[in-house]
Every structure is written in structure tokens, then in C-alpha cells.
Length: 355
Image 1 (tube, rainbow, N blue to C red):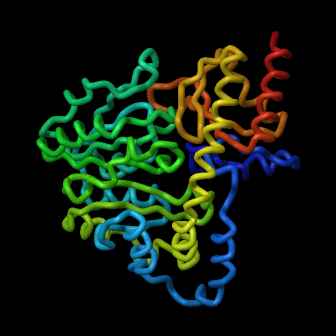
Image 2: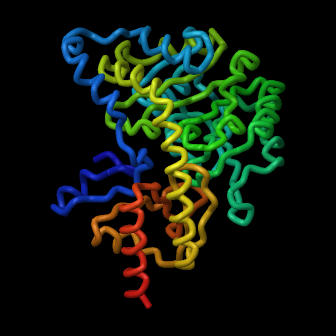
């Protein structure tokens, strides 16, 4: 049986617990899928009989307008994870630099092509920020570097000016830099962090984005990458099956890109509810790391809280399988106000029982 390394596994628990499940382990927009996206699924049912467009022309054109770039700079895939694996399969990096902790798929993908991995370990005492000494790790024998911004599971973003210094060092050493911006839409001031507009200036830059989290489309599977290097684009396009993006996913993506107000409303709602959760977790005595996105990393000596919360129908993400973390770390999503309050009330009951 395949080992499950991510959150969002409501299916295993559903087999053992008939009660409703509140899934705080997956970082999905609490507003749910926009109505226009749901309507796009219905309105285009007749088109699902035919094979999808393997070139994703309508979606790539809509993304080109949204990202202010050329459609030739865009590759779409079955979620961002699909593209991560395509990148490594296409480029076959012999040596890669990863920060730790971070999203597990980078390591999985590099291992698939037998690449060597160098780790830059983030320090808890520095609140898991990337420090200037990371530049010492970017050398000419490196092939590729992955940075998740904001990082998963910490929720901490890196400022644009600091990322550009890393990007420039990568360019000097002929290193490809993959910046995963899948959670950047949740930042109030995302323009201070995103470097997606720099793809035309740097041919070693690849940006990853996804519809998964911000538009609550995890089950539909849709992601994309931005890159102006035609050689890289062609190599990645040649990897994998031709219909990795279904027609329904493509139609949903086009509809979602028009949901500007929905995204702005989400940013404000997430910020307000994140602040509530951070305050309450601090009050309970947990060490909380100051996320700026739709999930929160915290640390507690009460390592059985995951199991205890399941008794209340709540799933949270243990971070014990993240490199550079252990069983004292947990990640929760920012959910609706009602669900957040139920989560905190449940935690308080658990803490009182353990006294």
C-alpha cells in the first residue's frame, strides 16, 4: 500500500468514523469553490465526451492575460505536483538544493531521477526564516534549487528583494530556480513577495502556481508553471501523457481566473481568522510560528493531540515526517470562523483533561 505523506486524507478516517469530519489537515479556502466554477462544470458537460485539448489553449490564453505574459511561457498540469515531477524528469538534475522543512514532493521528484540533494536547514530559533548564508550553498556544481514561497509547512514568505538576490546568484552559477508560489494568493500584500513577473528577465526561473488551494479545487487537480526559457518549456512539454489536464479542469480554471473579488475577500477573511487562531494557540501555551498564509505551524509537548482531536472529529497534520521537524510540530488550516472556534474549544477540553 502506498504511504500517505500529505494532509487531506479524509477517506481513511471515514471508514472508521461515521461522524462528520472537520479536515484541518488540508489548506483549502474555507469559502469553498466559487459558484462560477461550479456553474462552469455544469455548463460544459456536453464537451466532456471529447478528448481534452492537449495544448490547453483556452486556459493558457486566459492565464497569459492573468499573468501578463505570453501563452508560450505557460505549461498546465494535473496540479502543481504533476509539474514538479515533470520538471525533474525533463531536466534530470544531478544535484539539487532544498530547504528543510518544505513541501515533500520536491525531494520525492528528485529521488525519482536519482539526484543528489543538499539541504539548507531552517532554524527554529530564527523562526524558520531563510538567512543570507543560503547563498553559500548556491555553487556551480548545483543544477536546480526549489523554494516554496510562502513555505509549507511554516507559512512564512520570503520578500521579493531577498528572492531576487538568490535568483541572481543562481543565474551566475547556471542553476535553475523553481519558486513554488502555490500559497502566494493568500498573502494580503503578495506583490511584495511574488517574482512571477521576472520570468522574462531570467531564463533560469520557473514559477509554480495552482488553483488547488485558493479556489478550493483540490479534487479537480489543476496547476501551471511559468518560464520564458523555450528549451526548458519544450523539454517539460515532452514529458508525460498528452491529456494531463481534463476538459473540466480547464473550464474551471478559465472561470476561476475571473474571480477577483472572491480572492480579495478570501485574503481578508484568512487574515482575520488566522490572527484569532494564533492568539488562542499562544494562550494555550503552544509555540506558534507567525504564518502569513492559510495555515499555521505550531509546537507542543502534548504530542497526542492529533489522536485526541480525532475523537472530536477533527483532523490535523502531524509534521513529524517533515525533514528537520519532529513529532512536536503540527500544522492546521485556517477554516471558517465557526470551525475555528470548535477547534479551539476542542483543544481547550483536551488540555484540561491532560492537566
